[in-house]
Image (cartoon, rainbow, N blue to C red):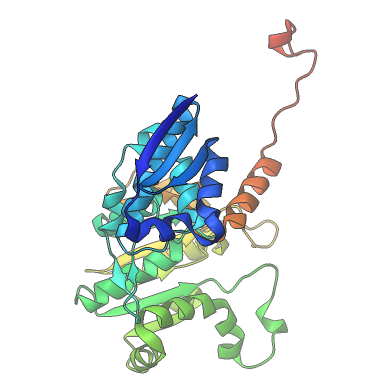
Amino acid sequence: MTERMVSIPEDVIGNLFGSFDENVQALERKCGVTIVNRNEGVTVSGETENVDRAADVIRKLIQVARSGEVITLQHVNYLSSLSEEEAREDVRDLLSDVVCFSKQGKPIRPKTLGQKRYVDLIRKNTLTFGIGPAGTGKTYLAMAMAVQAFKQDEVSRIILTRPAIEAGEKLGFLPGDLQSKVDPYLRPLYDALYEMMGPDGVARNLERGIIEVAPLAYMRGRTLDHSFIVLDEAQNTTQAQMKMFLTRIGFHSKVVVTGDLTQIDLPDGQKSGLRQAVSILQNVEDIGISRFTKQDVVRHPLVQRIVEAYEHSEHPEPAHGPWDKKDGGSRR
């Protein structure tokens, strides 16, 4: 049994502990330790390896708190789940990388190492693919990068697009004209824009044609120069649609393609254009591919557990039979 004292500055201790000490209780469960509050900090007790791990997480959480972030269970769960190699990376690299600021002045920054690598790839490459489960910030960070590029005059317009296929629904069965049929599919893109630019700023730029939010079919026949283009929900593109879209890239443009290959809603027999594109283009220069995992989920902790449960159900552990080699037999 090992016991270690970890000093915590008074100005961050309330933030670090969380409501009803929920953050500390989560850290105890994740690391298998006992944490007791002392006047000058906390004592961490348990197996030596677990104590070292928990103490390192606490020090990183102090850095997060000092940056002005409100510590949440997501911070605790993420920092506790890092591998030894990942844990050696300095969390300050994440905290110092502010992509842009929301309309309310809140800094928008990567929250995981996976998100940090994604942002770096977008900066480096003309075309970046962001692939992974829901809640990993793929679209949100791409939108933030687009807004920042526009504000810095790196591009003259922002184009946001999605295939109009979702969860088996068909546009023809929805009420209203074409625009009202399409808007629900594009609503998440509008929501992100409103947070970053405000409703008035978005409306003004939409009227001026500086921001365009449109279904993927509207991209056909166009060449997109001096633009930041985000294709969202790309797992629902057909192979022909994806090729059409990727050949629209013009000069001085940047493109981000996001999608989740576990949530393909294409009709039976249709193959995902995103899956094919990633396979074909993975070694092409000036193209980056960022693969997110359940560790990068930044929504409610339950979302991460749901993703993990689905992964387990789709890839269950193989059952061992009497023919397995480890039992001295051979498969016939």
